[in-house]
Amino acid sequence: MAGLCAVSNLATAQAPLTCYGSQQFAVNADFGSTVSGVGDINGDGVPDLLVASASYGPVHHSTYRGRIRVLSGAAPDTVLYQYTGGDYTHSNPFGGPEIHGDYMGWNEETADGLGDIDGDGIGDFIFSSRYYDTSGDNNAGAVWVKSGATGATLYSYTGSSGHFLGLSVRAAGDVDGDGTPDFVIGSHLADPGGVTDAGKATVYSGATGTVIWTLVTPPTAQAQQDNLGVSVSGVGDVDFDGFDDVLVGAYRSNVGASLDHGSVSVFSGQFGTLIYRVDGAAPGDQFGRFVSGVGDIDGDGAPDWITKPSGNGLEEIHLYSGPSASLLGIATAPQSGQWH
Ligand SMILES: [Ca+2]
Ligand SMILES: [Ca+2]
Ligand SMILES: [Ca+2]
Ligand SMILES: [Ca+2]
Image (cartoon, rainbow, N blue to C red; front, side, top):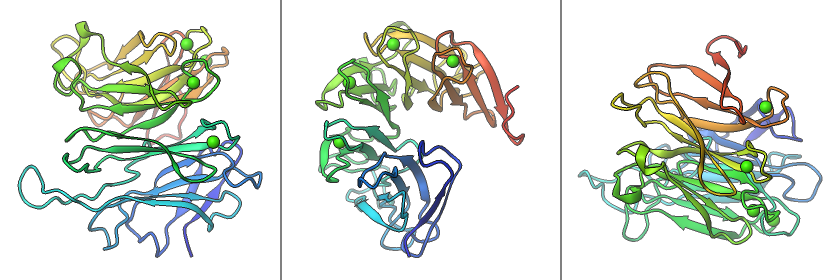
């Protein structure tokens, strides 16, 4: 038997979603390392599921190739499409053998449904392998955009050596206002302007696969190892200009000489410019490690967003207003998610 998923709300594929591995996935293959809705792929009227097993390998837990499967929402034992990451192909640049396969579907931000980008009426999807090796580059990373109708590749992208392209790949809404959904790919180890690991995020047109915007921190605020793009997300239209905007985390950005506060930036979809940036409160908070648009939480008619810091032992999710960037609340573990 293949994997089994119990989904509480197929219409939106929102959590809670519980999945159970099987012998095919192996117990420790990280089944469910990514879970996302992809819309109705097979035309049976029920949205389908994108599920990854990041540590999948032909030898149990040894090669970390990773695997992405599209499962039927109506019958989760039915595999509609399956993609398997590659084995390691290069030696470890730090000496000794390379120990990682491609890790396809590394975490919850490495696969997403995009909506219909090629105009055939069926939803399409994106996923990545952050440890993908190109012929010359070790751990370059790779991203694929696939047709929901055929499973074939619509677009693909690779990073450069050691950049782990695709740590975060997400739907971005319609950024350029052409009526077709777009997508965003983070590259947190890129060196824009020659600034080491400042990071960037690239917004691509769903209609053509070409770059709409390369989002970087304004040079005056740019610093080494900011890691902008460690997490990316669509957020919706926060400034009411009719174009969807983009949320980007930079979890190691500084506030003056105070290190690693981290930050979340919202960029204009229409202009590719910074609308605002919110910094973490304390050094080492690593604010912005995970970001996501969440729709209109506070009922003011505009979309809002969340972030999860990763430093200082913080087990919190912070909710912000999209238009005003004001803090609406913090959920703290292990309490049961009450905003306070
Ligand atoms: Ca399509
Ligand atoms: Ca578009
Ligand atoms: Ca906008
Ligand atoms: Ca709101």
